[in-house]
Structures are given as structure tokens and as C-alpha cells.
Length: 341
Image (cartoon, rainbow, N blue to C red; front, top):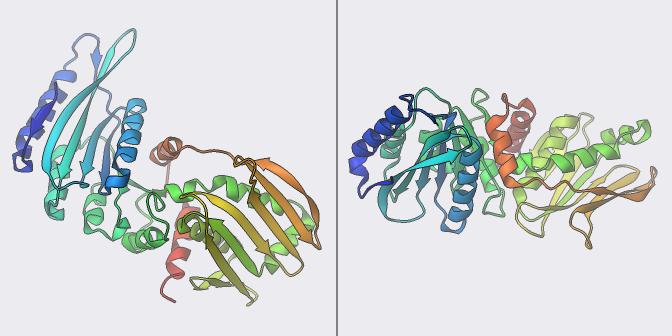
């Protein structure tokens, strides 16, 4: 039975309804169990992506029993709904809860207090932040203080790399809280393809002589992360948002072209003293990437599949990952160094 309140000032009645539901489903009623593994807190404030985020929130909750607290700041209205959900199997019924909050322009401090009232203390809290202004929003800092881990997507709805920069600034590179950016996670296939270029001794020596990195993508976040990942791997130092310095002192230029769909990388080119390494999505088949090497280490083109990683899988990975990823945090640290120069 759905419980609705018109005003968030009456949040105590909502919290009481949640406590009642908790008590009823934890009382050992035959055939009914309550299996909440986490508080799954989702914040969204852009109407253009609200439904997209909402659908994936429900999909995650179906697979991972949760107390879902969906914070909708995409409209001006205020109110809340408590929606019990049930999953039935042959032997039992599992009952969980979903709270949908329409918070309008609620003050950040009041929003943090609202979350504190509604979340369960005995399970971890995962915050999926889908704010349109990235992590510069003061509500992000207030909500993340109650989270066990944080999930963001720096290319969810914007083409610029501002969300990556705001994430680096907002976290102040705090390595004590697990943070996962879907824009970084979806680059796994490209990192693997770049590694393929340098899988023999001859080409591996070229790594120290890279002079330029070119990336074409539909949003800047992926290009920033790929270049920063290379910087971390090869011990480059950022000298501006478009250049790095190697350990031997030579300059590596970074060029990004905005092309294609959001969240999609189309082309990566690495230039060295004697060769160029090309990886480009096929025009005829977007699920295939053509790899080729020209110059000193010339190699005939070869095709590799571009692994398709759906967003739901990425969110699940971020939720279930066992610990902080030091490579990601080092990469994020480098993106901070690429700013304001």
C-alpha cells in the first residue's frame, strides 16, 4: 500500500510508516522475509535524464534488495511517496521499501536531515549522484557525508568535462571514501585496446617517446580520463589542460575533438617519435574497432570487438566493487592537476 504525504514538513509520518513496514516484515511472518542489503540513495535534478535514472534505479533494486530513497529535484513540487515492493519466488515473498521524494528547492541542510531520518543505520548507504551541475552542488557534499560509497557519471548529460573537474574538486581527493565514476568505468575496453598496441618489446619501447595523444569522443569526460590514465601509467606530469611533461622532460600534447554521441569514444591516436598507433570505431559496424600501427613499427590493421557494457552493469559494478580503486584515484588526482593552468 502506497503512503503519500503532500509536505516534506510531515516527514515524521513517513519515517513512522517506514518503521512500521520494517517491523511488520521483520517479525517472522511465515513466507515473508525482509532482505535489505543497502540504502540506495539516488539524486537527480535534470528533467531530461530523470526517467532514465529512475528506470535504472528500479532495475538495481530488483536485483539488490534495498531501501531506495529516490530524491527528485527536477521539478518545483514537494511531497513524498512510500512504495512497498514485493518479489515472489516459489518459497517466499521478499518485501522491501522505496521512498520517492520530490524535494523542489528544499534547503541543502534540510535535505541532509531528511535523508538522515529515512535511511537505515544498520546497512551501507550508496549514493548515486546524478546532479546536472556535477559535484559543485552543495547538496552533494551534504549527502555524501552519509554515504558509504559514491557513484557519479561525469558524462551523463553534458559534453564538457566540467563534471570530472568538479568531482576532483569536491572530493578534495579524499581517498577514504570509495568513489566510482561510470565515465571512467566504461573506458575499460579502450584501456585494453591501448595495451594491445604495446604487447611486444619493440612497441613497448615506444611508450617512453609518445609525443601526442588525440581522442575523439562525444563528451569530454572520457577523453580527460583516458589521457589522465595514460599520464598515471607513464608517470607524466600535467602542465596544462592540454599538455603533459614526461619524466625525460619532453612535452606530450593532448587534443580532444568533440564528435559523436554522449559517452562514446570514437577514435584514439598515439603519436611517438617513429610511429602512430590508431584505434577507431568502424563506420560500418559500431561494435568493432580497427587497430593499426604506421611508421617504424608498422603493422597491418586488425579488428577487435568493442565490448558493449550497459549502464546497469556499470552501476552494479560500482556498488559491488570490494574497495577503493587506487588507479582511479591517481587518475582523478591528475585531472585535478590539468585544471586552471
